Length: 416
Image (cartoon, rainbow, N blue to C red):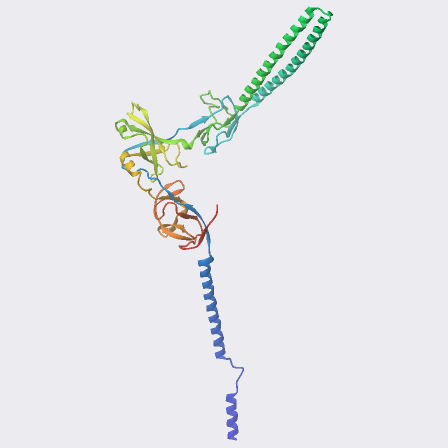
């Protein structure tokens, strides 16, 4: 009995219970799942890294860094103040007196030469033109009538001459017919002159009609709108009431320059062509390279000054007439020496600048990759910024590109 019981006990211990969880098998399955996930993540990271290094090309827009011509260097030998003036400025009016029918400009508008900026009421001028044209047509009709009568007179002369040969009419009849031909020829010529006169009247009426359209005499900017619809303008009026002298005032911004009054005791320090630095009161950090155009050969007795014209070497929309300016006349000798120095820095579009913390940086395209460069800033010139270091003239800088652009990234330049 004991032996049978022991055998059953031993067999029971050897029997596998399939209802109990297989701990070892579960642990093995989870280990394989984790290992597979790690391997897949590593493969994905490697593929992304390879894509970024080889095929992840980012598109950028670039611009070339432009050199800055040396301003002449040298110390200031004389400082003066003055104002921005326009050499080409005009109050535009019609050449006749009339009522304003339309004003097509506003302050700040840019207009082209020949552009219509206003119109006058042209009812009377159109009527005069129509009358002149009718007179021309009438004169042309009278010419046709006179020419037809002349042709008839010529036929009468030939007929009378034939009758005289046959002794059927007197010689006096022929002479009378010839006189009528000569008189009619003169009438035809007079009528031709009447046609010329009528045509001239048509042209004059057309000119008067054209005067009702006011056009810009040159390309510029409107700085004043002087008339409104319904007002009367006259080139001979002194203004006042509802009578104006013009439609508006235009300024040619390309003709802007600086005029300064220099004390006559120091005018010997100024000479034509001398290098000058101009600083607008509105932009004290912007030094504008300039030069002396001319010294006006007359002095102001009341102020003991001589007027000097200074040309601006940089054109910019921020420069407007009547702005206050401080100018520094540079020493001519040092300026000549400095003319051979290398340009001071480069100009790049302001959009090329980026901030990396407190540091100003730009990205320069080198081959097919970009290089991050730290730069030091100078002044401004319109929409451009001066870089004193970090970039050389002619290098291509990124002006538009991804916000996450990084040093060494592969790029391709967008075609314009």
